[in-house]
Amino acid sequence: MFILKTIDELKSYRNSLENKTIGFVPTMGALHKGHLSLISKSKEQNDVSIVSIFVNPTQFGENEDFSKYPRNINKDLELCKISGVSAVFLPSTEELYPSSDEVILIPPKNLTNKFEGSLRDGHFSGVLRVVLKFFNLIKPHNAYFGKKDAQQLLIIKKMVNDLFLDINIIGCPILRDSNNLALSSRNIYLDSTAYNKALQIPKAIEGVSKAVLGKEINARVIEKIALKELKELDVDYCNVVDLNLDSIEVIKEKESLLLIAVRIDNTRLLDNFWF
Ligand code: PAF
Image (tube, rainbow, N blue to C red; front, side, top):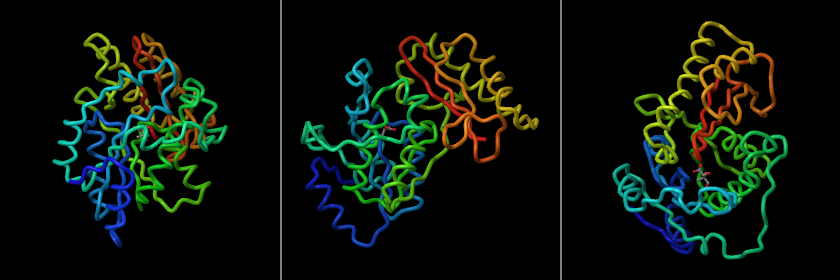
């Protein structure tokens, strides 16, 4: 497995790949089984799989957890190696952001002025900046993102569409632990009390899933079913929306999703259900 730390190293590796299909999995490290499932999908669909590990400062707000975001590079590299990753791109901040005054990207208003976007000012602009840099450097054919960060996935798809990028964006299913909590690098912040509280989130998802199997299609009823399970948590949002993130009255298969974000102590946890 190649470990590429500079843009020059990455470019010369990329040039050596010629006609191979390239799969790309961007990450901020602290890899868990969710990331490994993206890597495994990439390996299945491409000749070469490249993973980036970079805790991107431009997507963290001033009062967010950039400095304490979990970092465990040796373990991450080991996991990449065991998973059969072809190369890891491990740039420094200076390498990726050489200029303090650079072109930035403004994500579309309608996808950004709500949910994570309204609570985390500048977050999606920072995500697009770094993802576009990666896309331009790595030139992947396919790029893999978890459906857990649903809003991020939709905004990245929109960027690829609007900027005519020739890259397939593949959204991959949420992976859950043995108690059905969605895997996230931030789960590490939860002590046992917080973890037990967090289990109300998968209960809400299960309640919604059962209701949908029972043919419930009313979006407000579905939100109420979820909120009933979340009643002891600080809920940032729990809304049924379409793929433009607009509120809807009635769910439609493959065109709607329930978005949930809660705060437990200082940790924000996201989950969602794609109908
Ligand atoms: O989802 C993440 O881990 C990050 O937002 C990403 C896509 C790696 C960009 O920093």
